[in-house]
Length: 627
Picture (cartoon, rainbow, N blue to C red):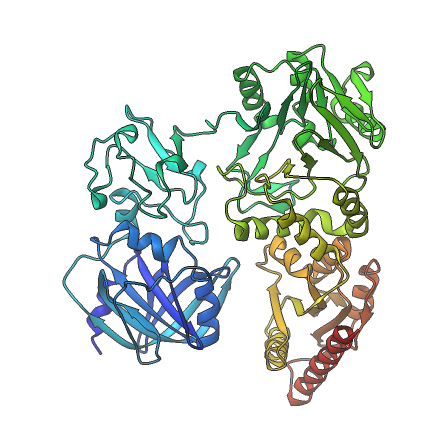
């Protein structure tokens, strides 16, 4: 073994590979480091959403190829911005198989390391895999690429699943004489000062002087997929259909909503202008922090607003209405009667500025007709949708939306949007599952070509999001268990670890969440499909740990379609943990399975009780599947 290979580890750029059965995959990673020298161990951070993460979990092995500074951006793009689910990353790439039949990429590689996983650490969005090195070799004397070199010299950009990912707004770039352009697909920034030397474009070449056949060096997108990058929210009003404009705002930096909901991907506040040949309507407004952007876009398209359609009174959509009414004093606010009452309370809008509309009432703009559809409890009691008949556009406000800041106005990557939309549903819409079913029935009768929500990208394939919602709101659960746990001195953690293994042996998918570090959005998403929830806690002052109480309260408030609940935990001298947790989750229509409470640290007899609980859950899952 060549231990000098370890000298090349830096905060840099690596191809991490693994396998699952006969399938192989690899990805770019930028967090790889040596943990110990005796035994020699390394750790790599991999996003849980990546295919490579699943392969490492399965094979318990990985290889790391340390890339050189000469690595072409296209090579990095293939391994870093494309998914092995639908792209052969190894086509045309030199590699060999290591001791564990894991591919080792040789192209553009300075040195490689092969490791077997000994342990892993849950890091919320990522897993830190710690591996014992079983082989390593230095291939050449080329200089390894650091992450700083990748960004500064290569003009690279972190994919969203990288540990070092930051939103576009976090990258403050000074304005230059020659404007930069950003790829709307992958985020690569073309900088005229640097050019694209890998593809023969010399520094000093402006974007407009690039050859027509030039493509993004990372993802291969054409020049038409680039837009001017000046910094900030420079995105202009966009015409999505004739005389229908997006005039909203992208909030790249917001990380918390309602002082409760994490926003790992930022969000957007979508507002739309619909111009008829006689009158013009503004569909929703934006958060008050973004009012100036909305007003600027309205002025640039010379909108003369007659109506402000307020689907929902929450301030992230209604907060700019007062400013709009000041700019357009003749405009009226169109909403439901309940929405009117709430808007008067929240924004102090004069009562004579409102037009109340009934369910299925229409409003003519001349050559365009707006039909209003009452949709209570998605997610407040006053909500409604608007259907633009002539263009077959359905404006749904919060419903069917996603907290996702992106320069893609329309859905480009359904996998990314699916995750964001599911998170949004889980955190905000899931408690209103029954009401959502009824409202889905209403829109199913419409001929819809575009769904335009007030958060996230627009859907030009409505079936994608509507079918997803049908699945989420159905009563069908999956063979999955969510374990929410907290452990103070290791007793409860030992029980949870044993239970996890018991579920895996029974081919039950298990999602453990350590409540001391858990992103509640990730937990909410896991609850959407799970048939069973297990709450694991030590006893504190005679009851559950406060974090377990919070988790139980959260599950109760979100009202998932979960069918079974159980409690496991430890105590020293007694308590009423089960009774207290049972009282908290009264909203859930679940069967409470036999709890497993043990005294002190678990012994063999206690582990047998956990095995029996796993058997009971397996049997329960099989029973509901047969039905």
